[in-house]
Image 1: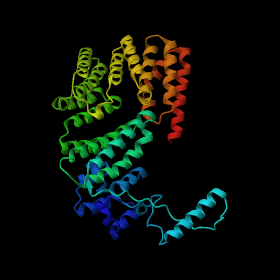
Image 2 (image 1 turned 60 degrees about the vertical axis):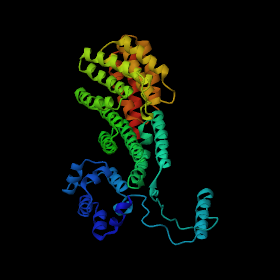
Image 3 (image 1 turned 30 degrees about the horizontal axis):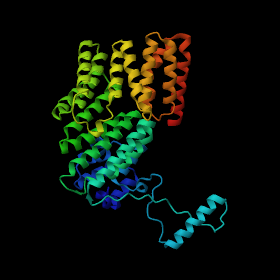
Image 4 (image 1 turned 30 degrees about the vertical axis):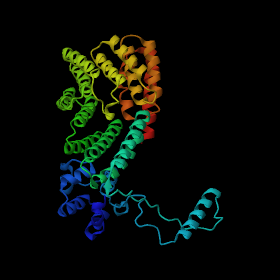
Amino acid sequence: MDRFKADWDRPEMRDALARRDIGTVFRLLVEGGVPQRELALATRQNQSEISDIIGGRQVMAYELLERIALSLGIPRGHLGLAYEPVTKPSSLDEAAKRASFLAHAAETVLGQPVFGSAERTPLVVEATPVPSKVGPGDVEILNRVLRDLTGLESQFGGGVVLAAVEGQLVWARGLLNASVRDTIRPTLFEAVALLHRRASSAAFDMGRLDQARQHLLAALDLTQDAQNLSLQAMLFYCAGRMEQYHGPPDAALRLFQFGYPLALASRSPRLCALLEVREARCYAVMSNRESAERSLALAQENFHAEGDVREWLEFFDESELLAAVGVTWAELGEWGKAVAALRRSLRLRGGDNALARSFDLAELATCHLRSGDVDEGVRVATRSLDLVGRLNSKRARDRLDPLDRAARFGGRETLGVVHRITEVRGAWKVTAS
């Protein structure tokens, strides 16, 4: 971040960075006029965490140090982090640099210095410059990158894209400080907010909930500035989705209910349906059948109502609706209805959405096992585990929990499924570590 570039070479700042005393670094920036809230937003932390660090809490985690360095533009070498180009390599002219490269390349390929020995120069990684003015083309680039990263996450899991989308955000957030026309500003803010949403989704997929929540808060700040009600509703859906799998059902329900008035105000029936079908599952988990069935009916009615569907909402297609309906029926113990909905979802799913297919298959296998259809349950479980084994996703492995429990009650016929789940999880833990 160029804004702070001059700060890093101040003697007191260099001393604090050398000691990795982030509390002093933050304090010096605040004394220089930088609000704590801005530091929190830039480094994706809570403002209370910034205050705690200034108050003396040590930052020890390498990952957090890297994030702070990347977010604020601190030269990595100042913090003693690896692969930092402290200075640009030498004052060699282009001919000398070319000769040095040739000597290195030849020695690497042939195993001997056929063009003479060359002194290895440090790797230089320079920040991509941000344009001084932002136009529609810059926003379209962000949206194109977002589409590509979304596709990669759907096919391979959040672990494949998390670092990439967070790196892209460093450049994208720099655009917010550039000159931009009022007519373009809302689309720019939306594009950056959607990148934060994608980073949140990838972090959630890898089980990094704090990181996921921070990206959602950053996105909410941007949507608030732009008064983007529909995207705010979507972000409450994202927050509630995390709580559905990592918190009590009433916490998730509250978040979906916070988003619902925003969806209504934005006049988006599809967005209302997304929140309603998620509310239905919360009610089912809370054993409130009447409310669950009412929410399911509303969701299906609104899904098929006429209305514009924003590009970032297109993921909520009929296959996604049916999958959510199937999960809700399963929570209510209606195995036949759950199986029918999940099978229809799988028929409609595209082959490039391996992550969602793995969820559907695991849920479908669980329904078969719990309804007593063991042979079909084992067959579908095998298909799910084949997919999960190829995904870089903690969430895909966590979603095997119900299947694991059902298989453990299945006796000898399902022992193979239990063993396979253990293998798939164990292999990924070794790779992830």
